[in-house]
Amino acid sequence: METLQDWLAHCERLHPKTIALGLDRVRAVADRMALRFDACVITVAGTNGKGSTCAMLESIALKAGWRCGLYTSPHLVRFEERCRIGGEAVQAEALVPHFARVEAAREGVALTYFEFTTLAILDLLSSRGLDLVVLEVGLGGRLDAVNVIDADCAIITSIDLDHQEFLGPDREAIGREKAGILRAGRPAIVSDPVPPASVIEHAQAIGADLWRFGHDFNVAGDKQQWAWAGRGRRYAGLAYPALRGANQLINAAGALAAFTALRERLPITAQAVRTGLAMVELPGRFQIIPGQPALVLDVAHNPHSVAALVANLDAMGFYPRTHVVLGAMADKDLEAMLRRMEPLADRWYFCDLPTPRAASAAQLRARWEAVRGPRAVEASEHASPREALDAAAAAADPTDRIVVFGSFYTVGGILEGGTPRLQAPHLRH
Image (tube, rainbow, N blue to C red; front, side, top):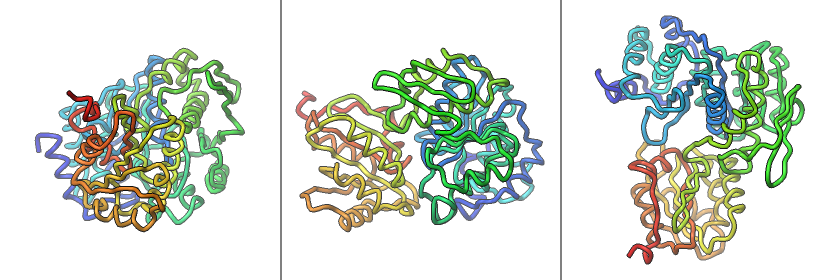
């Protein structure tokens, strides 16, 4: 196996399941690899807001002059997006020797694709002499492969219902799993304004240094600027984060709490905070692509994140019609997602996705038919996200907008081959 693609194909063949939670196998291989970090490590778990929080941590750290590495998942277009060093995605060839190290240490242990690739990326990050490593948890927390690393600080973002078949039936059960990333005596940043009691109880039971939104840190602001305050530090006159959406202030608050908790080890300046938040980028999170019609890309894939997307769309102002492209996994709460978007949608474009987990366009349409409102709304089915977008662009007027959501695969299918620039049909001549 000589290329990254060779190794990824190998990883897909090793374990019969896509998801197999548990740390015993991963820890055994990590121990044989002698995997350890000299860098300061922040781990981020939660249902929604993880990716945005990680991006803000990275952006602020880089502006403060720290050497920062970042691991996130899944990717939108290319696997290499999962690992960034100094703000840049790593090269495919740089990952290859670290996949080889995992294979050598595996000694027959069956790792899932996620576990194998996580260990390879952790190994690369540990070898680069970094000051800060930010790790996004894949699923849950307690039993996620990322949790083999004892983080110096843990952040738990907003918690809602998702992956119930693995994490439990309600927010309390899910919160208990997320809280598994907390460590005794170390900062535990809870940025969910109304966290499940299970998170607080676990943090207190193990003696973590608990920082709660609304208790240990808080935000205030008006239309022009905002401020953060918490435990002996205050940042005032901040511009709003470059990432759009009302929920981004909560994510930014959690990131600033983490840096404040770690200030003796990783001091940052107010200027680094200002510049970092002003310049942070994260494709696929309420990403508005200018053009006619306007195009909004969002990886929202559970009812909570779709509700946030709908609120953000409402705040955009008036558009004569909203065309909605949806591709999603079959195991999601599709009815709730569809219900939340239905009042805004003037026409639906359902699409297939290139993974066995996905609901087909026909299945999505059938689910929509079961919950649709009384309005006369058209719908169509398409073989891919790009074909669905092309159909929406052909039907839209210049003053309309197109919203693409439902999965990383859906947004990734749009961004593959470059960011699209739309122009309504009668403006193309």
